[in-house]
Amino acid sequence: MIARIAPFFSRAADSDLWHSFKRSPGAIIAAIVTLAILLGALFAPIVAPHNPFDLASLSIMDANTPPSWEEGGSPDFLLGTDDQGRDILSAVLYGSRVSLLVGFASVLFSMVLGVTLGLISGYAGGRVDSFIMRIADVQLSFPAILVALLIDGVARGLLPRDMHDKLALYVLIFAIGISGWVQYARTVRGSTLVERNKEYVQAARLIGIGPITILRRHILPNVMGPVLVIATIHLAIAIITEATLSFLGVGVPPTAPSLGTLIRIGNSYLFSGMWWISIFPGIALVALVLSVNLLGDWLRDALNPKLR
Image 1 (cartoon, rainbow, N blue to C red):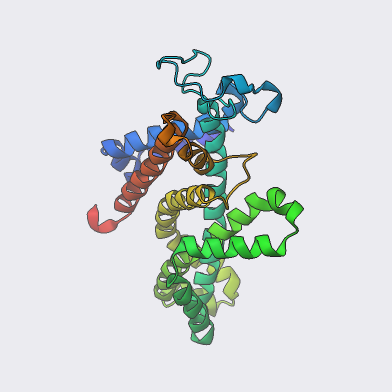
Image 2 (cartoon, rainbow, N blue to C red):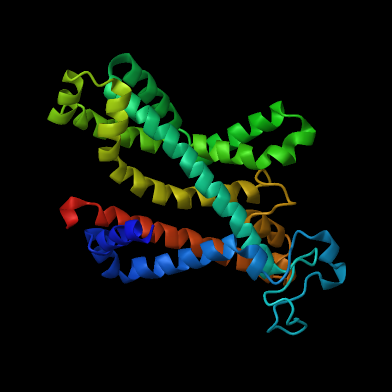
């Protein structure tokens, strides 16, 4: 097993991408921040001082406690508590898990749907291409947040009321995912239009390889570079969209709050002097989105042959 992994790391260390990463301080800092947030969210049950979702451990007497360095603060609650006595630091760690889960799942859904439709559109051409692209053009005329709000509202209207909280996370992932597939489809379509006329694709057709196999084995690997860049940048957009929907009250249920839900809760107390309830989740959200965006910008430049 080690003998198989060692060559992979050896090739990665000698790659142009790694050398570009080492020469970019911004990308290194962004990667460190992103990795820290990812690890904090992944190991939240271990590193979090408290479990903010354990109702038995919450005490209303601890509600609205300021950060530990403020007057009236407690060393047990480093960043203070909210109106229900939940530790803000623990809530941010657990909330980051929800935000990242929605972000990664919606981006994966958008990428699979968009790449599939882009390959079909670019390879088939004709009426199929026109039909898919007209749908994409119509969706591009609406902001992603409005599309997500529409889908979320329709789902809430069709589903039974007692199922809203149970299915809220899946509806949110679907709503954000379906609003972001167009960029993948248009990019992959353009690359497929170029690749389908090249000699290796023509040779594959001549020896009797089917269209699905050609798309999967030959064209798809050659169009994935731009897709990875779009996915990295789209991850930040998906996290922001989820936070916006949760802030508006149509995101994840309060029993499993994300960073957007925590900011919405703290917004009600912001002018009462309890700034820490919304400020610290906001800082975590800004740091996560900014670092992912910086990584996306670096990856776009690193994969651009004109900038090498």
